[in-house]
Image (tube, rainbow, N blue to C red; front, side, top):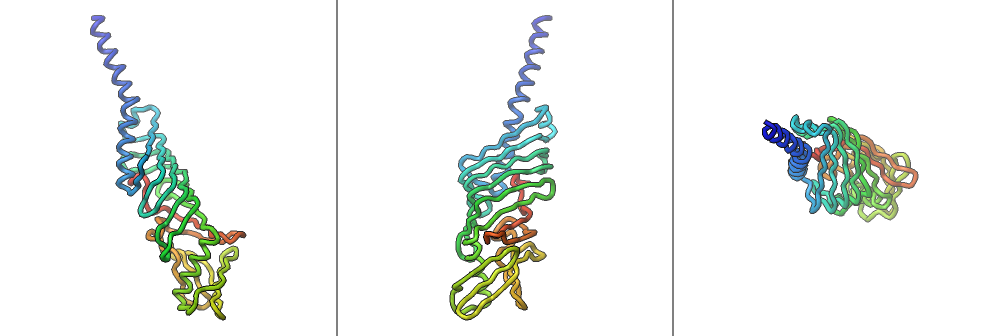
Length: 238
């Protein structure tokens, strides 16, 4: 009888260890495959899953999931490093009640024919709405704006002066012509420059140039372009 009881207790202990150790590893493997399917590729993707109690994972729920990677690519973007934490995760539909994290060293390979570098993209929110904030450095913002406006307006010579002024003004000078415009976000979430009395010029296309649907665009006192928007893709593959 004692031997039988010991066997039962040992089996229960091994099952408990399996749940505590094995389920998080299995969940991490599933999510790693999910983020790969979502488009994130990196040589060292690390997914850490925490559930308390661990058997919550049997119901496909996790308290916290942390996603880290370096030298990654995602939907055409090149990312130096990524560190994002998800809280209240449903493994079934790959959703989270809360998201917070940062992508650093982000390069968009082709915006108006040239790479666009973003120092960082900060993520926040959760549920159906994950927001993103990023800043385009003043020099890159001037180049982007000048090239697109000059092309759209048919200016015969390259712009000689470009100025971005808080909160949302831009001026482009080419030879004797100066074009002034207001930066705005249109109904589709694109970044546009609206010349006085002219047709809006699209500078960044939502979901194409960047995986964001923009909600606002402002120029800070230093001439940097600050963008806010909503992420148009799910990092967990949902």
